[in-house]
Each structure stands twice: as structure tokens, then as C-alpha cells.
Image (cartoon, rainbow, N blue to C red):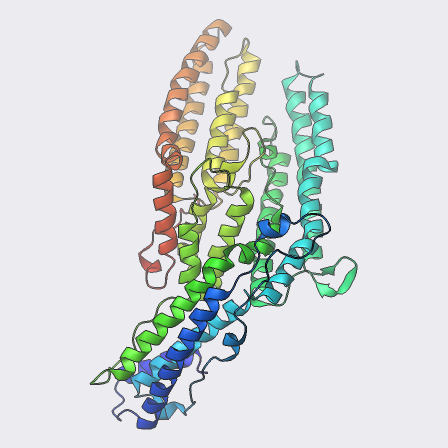
Length: 520
């Protein structure tokens, strides 16, 4: 089978002046392959219609002690063994034969589709279910030890201590920062353990690697490891920031960070029923495109354009959007959707800008399903922006003496510095514009607070001046973040935003997609 590079090289040669005519034997081989592919596409479509495998919910619903589904899992089976092959020729023999070049490109794409379909066969999905089981311990331990283990115990103990120093704000925030830094460092230790475990073998089964060696298994494993490494960077930032602050507490502990990632290994189970027919339809389209090219008279002068290999994943991602409040919308489901996007990038080498834009859009779904008051994940840009709003407006309170007001100003300045740090992580351009405007507004507010304190040495006058400024800027802050916050509250706009961003990952479309928001 010819590689993509070889096909492109031959096509370039064709378009840059080779003068010899088409090779008739190669053209005949392309026509024969086209006929075989058409027949196989029909076989594949029929086999796909009969295939059925269990979803995570169906497996989870089995009563205790029952290990078999109420139906027999059926894959595509023999059809995947009957894939036609294109006769090979030397490069020089086919460089001026567009129909052969088209057949070679189609064969290469069919090969990728066959590999994806093989990953959706019952035996391959079983390895993914086992990976979900074996990875539960390192990944769930990371998540639950954070929420209920030593790290959380330290934070809770410090919170209890704060009740006894409520009249000493400086001590209050110092204890909060110390606990937060300890939390972040313990979280980093847990992340290191999780990464090491995930890259190793299953507990109690040293012959089984946690990450399966199948294409989809390796893909999910890479997605999870990337997620964990991203959080490692975030926690290192938290430690660095907390050690440098003098006034602020620990806003980082508002983020508990999603870590229950073992479920992503079962994402292919969830989407198998839609991906199989989509890939079969793609093969049928490829066979029809090739048939048109081989039967055209006169023969085409250039190979035809082909559909993008990631289209089935792209369509599943676009079609799978759920409105805010739908009971089925969970962080686990959004993590699965983010893996679909990851797989598209692997298959199509999506440009970084297009991938970042689409990922930032899908991430805005992530914290929508959790209960109010629970710790959120830091990745969605709007979550970070609104947390800065919460921290700043909560701290902007006039004090009854000059010392308290100077402490408030120091606190407000550090909150802006905190906002500037968490602004540097990826986010949607629409959110970035409001976030940047917010930070500029808060810096302006801090200047006004400093001017008010200098102009009003009397403590009563300071109180009144800061109270007026607090009310004034509360309204301005709301107006500043309302455009993007309102957009993300509108399901129709969010759905369209995600669909456009995901569609822009398709080859050829990526160059026209908006660039991700740059770091300030």
C-alpha cells in the first residue's frame, strides 16, 4: 500500500510537467480494485448493520454475579478480513496515471478505517473495558484521595483552625495559603503516582499493561496522560503562586480538578453503534468516488478529493451535544467527547490552532453538570474568569480603619495577579476578550482604590469612598463579563459555537478557523 507521502509526491509529479501518458496496466489495476472495493463496501455495510456491542450502561446494569449481556455481542467479523488490495507498481510506472493515484489514496484511507473498525470489535472493546477496570485504582485514587484523603484532611483541618483566628485576617490568609500549598504538593505526588501506574502493568496481573496496545487503547491512554500532565503544570503554578503571595488566601483550592478518567477507556463502547455505520458509509463514498474516476471518459487529469478520515468522529462530536441541565450531561460524558476530538487530531494531524479552538469550546460543557458549590476543573476559560470575579467582588469590602483598607488593597492587587496567571491557560477568543477587559478594569479599580485612600485620610471618609467604588465597579464588572457569560448560558449559541469549531478541524477548513486566544 502506498503511503500518503508517496501519493502526494506522485500527484505533484503529475502536475509539474511529466509528459508520458497513463500506464494502461496501472489504470486497469485501479479499475479492478474499484470493482472489488464496491463489492466489499456492500459486504461491510451489511455486516455493520448486524453488529452490536454493549455500552457501559448495559454492562453496568447487569445484576451481581451476571457476567453476560442479555444479547450476544456481534462484530463485523469476516468482512474485515476480506479487504481488497490494490496491485502495486513501481513509482515511475504510475506517476502519470491519476486513476491509480486515486486508487492508492483510497486504499490508504480504507486501511485506516479498517483499523478503526477493528478497534470496535467485541474482543478489542473487551480490552478497553479491562483497561477501564485496571486504571480505576490509580485514577480514582488520585481523585478520591484528593477529595477525601490526606490533602483534603489538611485543608479541612486548616479551615477549622481559621474559626479561631477570624479576627486576624493576616493569619487567616497565611493558614489558608499554607494549607493550599500543601494540598497542591500532595496532589502533585498523587499525579506522579497515577502517571507511573498508568504507564505500567495491571495490579495483580503483571502480564497485562493497563493501556492496551490497540490503536484505540493507545489513543485513550495518550489522552489521559496528556490530561494528567496538564494538571501537573497547573498544580506547579499553584505552588509557585501561593509561595509568593502575602495577602490573598488560596483561590486555587476552588479547583479540585477532574481525575476520574478511567471511564474514557470506555468511550469507544459508547460511540461504537454510531461509528461503525459512519465508517461503512465512508467506505461506500470512497468506492463511489473511485468508481466515478475509473469510469470517466476521458480519464481525469488529477486524483479526486476524498472525504476526511476523521469525519465519523467529528459528526459524533457535533451530534452529541446535550443542552444544559440534561440528566445525561456529565463530566464523564464531556471527557469522552474531548477524546473524540483528540482522536480526530491523531488521525488528521489537526493544526494546533484549530484543535485548541475546538477543545476550548467543548471544555465549556465540562463544569455544567456538577452541583453548585462543588470544586470545578480549571480548564474551561469561563470558569476561571468567573472565579476571578467572585474572588474580587468578595474581597472588595470597605473597612473601618486605614490598616484594614490597606490590607484590602493589597488583597485586590494579588487577586488581579492571580487572574493574570490563570488567564494564560487556553480559552475561547470570546471569553478571552472579556477576561482581558476584566483584568484591565480591575487594575483600574485598584488605582481608584489607592487614590481614594490617599485622598481620604479620615477613616469614615475612606469607608464611604470605598463603598461607592465597590458598588460602581460591581456594576462595571457585571457589564464586562456579560457578553461571553451570556453567550455560554445560551444553549443555541453554545451548540453552534462547538459545531463551528469542530467543523473547522477538518483538513482544508482549519486554515479558516479562528485562532485560539493568545496568552497576554
